[in-house]
Length: 194
Image 1 (cartoon, rainbow, N blue to C red):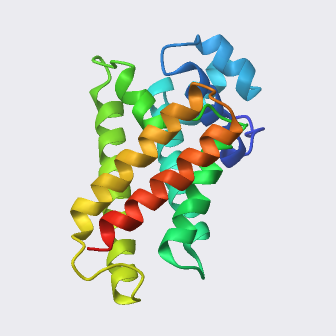
Image 2: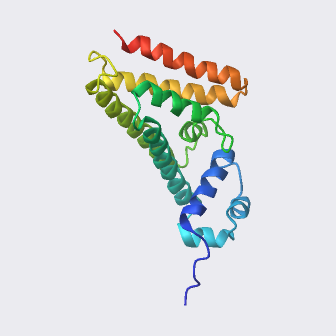
Image 3: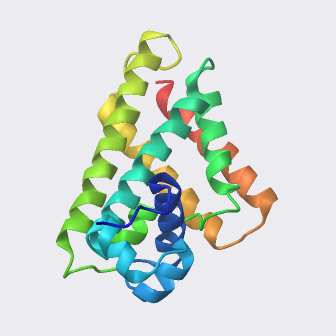
C-alpha cells in the first residue's frame, strides 16, 4: 500500500522554485534540494518523477506567477502606471534573486536538458504575447498611440524587464533602481507617443 503524501504540492513547488532560482538546475545536489523542500530525495522522485520534471513544474509556476503579478499591477489603472508598478515590484523583490528565472535557465547552458530550455523559451514567448495583448488593449483604451505595433513594442518592453532585473542583481541601490524604473517608463512613454 503506498504511503500518503506528506507535502502540499503547491507549497513544495514554491520551495523548489526558490531553490532552483537561487542555485540553478545544476547548482545543488538532489540531497540539498530535498533539504530545501523538506523531503527525502526518493520522495522527490516519487512525487515528481525526476529533478527535471520538478524543474519543469517550477518553471511553469514562475510563468503563472509572473503573469498574475503583471495582471494585478495593470488592473484598474492606465498601462504605464501599472507597468511602472510591475517593474518596481520586480526590482524590489527581496525574496528571490532579481535575475529572471527564465534568463537564468538560458544562461545555465543546460545542453543535456533541452526540454528545460525549450520550456523557458516557450514561457518567454508566451509572456511577450501576453504583453502584446495588453498593449493592444491599452491602444483600444486610449493609453497608447494607435500607431504602436503591439508585437514590436512588447519585445522592447520585455527587453527592458530583463535588463532591469539584471541591473537589480548588481545591487546599485534602491534609489538607482527606482530612478531606472522611472526612466525606463519615461522612455517607453516617449517611444509610444509618436
